[in-house]
Amino acid sequence: MACSKMRPALRLCASLRCPLTLPVRMRSTAAAKAKEQAAEDGAQGQPCPLGSQVDHMERSENLLHKPCPAATMNFENTQEAYKSKPTWELLRSLMVFWLCSIDPLVDRNQQLLQLSRKLLGQKLFEAMMKMTFYGQFVAGEDQESIKPIIKRNRAFGVGSVLDYSVEEDLTQEEAEKKEIESSTAEAERENIGAVQREKKYQVQPGFGDRRGGVISARTYFYADEAKCDHHMETFVRCIEASGGSSEDGFSAIKLTALGRPQFLLQFSEVLVKWQRFFHQLAADQGKAGLAAVEIELEVEKLKESLANLGIATKDEIHNWFTGENLGLSGTMDLLDWNSLIDNRTKLSKLLLVPNLQSGQVEPLLSRFTEEEDLQMKRMLQRMDVLAKKALETGVRLMVDAEQTYFQPAISRLTLEMQRKFNKDNPIIFNTYQCYLKEAYDNVTADVELSRREGWHFGAKLVRGAYMQQERSRAAEVGYEDPINPTYEKTNEMYHRCLDYVLEEIRHNRKANVMVASHNEDTVKFTLKRMNELGIYPEDKKVYFGQLLGMCDQISFPLGQAGYPVYKYVPYGPVNEVLPYLSRRAQENRGIMKGAARERELLLREFRRRLLTGNLFYTPQF
Image 1 (cartoon, rainbow, N blue to C red):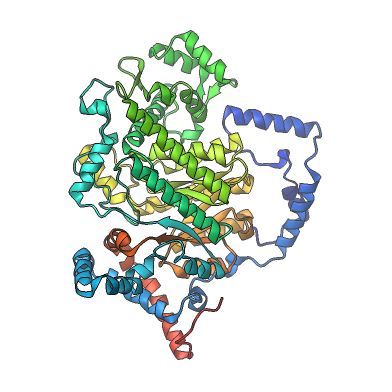
Image 2: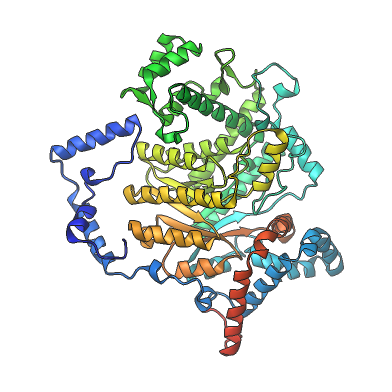
């Protein structure tokens, strides 16, 4: 236990961290080779660095005598939870949460907002919004106006994840039209022969407006390359603002803002088909049903299967393996397979997929136009610009998760950024949606790759924002529902993924995770596991995240106890953020109705201030 005494012998053993004492969690051939080398070095008496031993021993001794924050954490202490808020903000929160729980108001919020604007005029309308909904959930209009909130939150131990939340105010018809045009390749429009596309990875009428049924996630629609450049420049300014406002800030981006969604759809389909092919080969070897990272294929049988399918000749397949130094131990896992496929299917050779009927590796589409090829490359270039800016300013960059038909490509491109920019520090963070059935496989595979290659793994764990939309689309289009069947199963998945990453942090200090959750039980589970595994707040390996204007009773006690905790801080002009606020009111009504405890705590703090003569309390910082 992190906050209990350890026997001296165990403490010494834990503090040395020599290769021989580390629990081994590696499964891949490359990792196994590294493990064997470490064992040989230890057997030959190669010493661990003495300086790091002494430093870690001193750190361990100091921490043993410190009180454990997790043991004294109290989310019921309203005085501490709302210490950063003047009384009028408590009343605003109570009013906003109450209004958001009234269905008729929420259902007609757009009409009511338009009517209010006409009656009050623009200036009075904006003033009213800043005193109510906008003021509750949005930090300000621009980088300058958000500084007071960032500064105040920081004074009370809470950092910021800046998120420029402007959305186009499109009708459903306009959104559908834009999505269909930007998600359809020229070859598909001309109906030129191609490998059979899967419906899941094609734009579907009725689901072109990706805003429907989405909780707390802004949506971008492709207009043209100039608009993507504009989004990139906005993200650059957001990164710069985050770097200028704090030393340890985050900034959030969405990849659908940086390029044409057609590319994300096609690349996702390619990745999924190759992974499915791997699992089919595993089933042929009697290894179906195992977790993705636990599957190890026998190389000789694999070569034989590939040759029998006509994917390549035996000599070509042999050259693939020897050229990549793969399968030296006689087995190949999923990560080895991905490495092999990467070098067979470069983007410059088009997006290639295995066709099991013809026994050939074929392009997903018969051709790309020159402009489509340039659009692909520009998207990658924009991502590179943002990652370099984040590295330059010392800001962590969080890549938000999106719909499952985009997500394989988003995760893979984020992974490539991590391999490039996370060598020394965790700069790029990927987002994992734990309501997905495949969440655990995704997390474990990426952790394994980071461990094997030696870069810093960065993850944000969320439950997910697209459940209603994903389920409706899967049912109507006709593919398997990607979402866990129940809320309880999603909770189990979240805790399973989180526990795996926490174990990795314990054994490998290069892993980092943000627990992005408003669920108090999940936060308590995290604190308990951190305590058991010896992970301390000052290690800055585990972060907590909540939305601005919600769950202050969790955020601020964590921050004041020394845990790294952050608010997602949306900002943007009032009129341009209204679509975001309108959807938040509609889609968060369930959350607001369930926020009875938060309203109870706010009311309790208001009464406490009233009865103790602190009604006009103003935070000092």
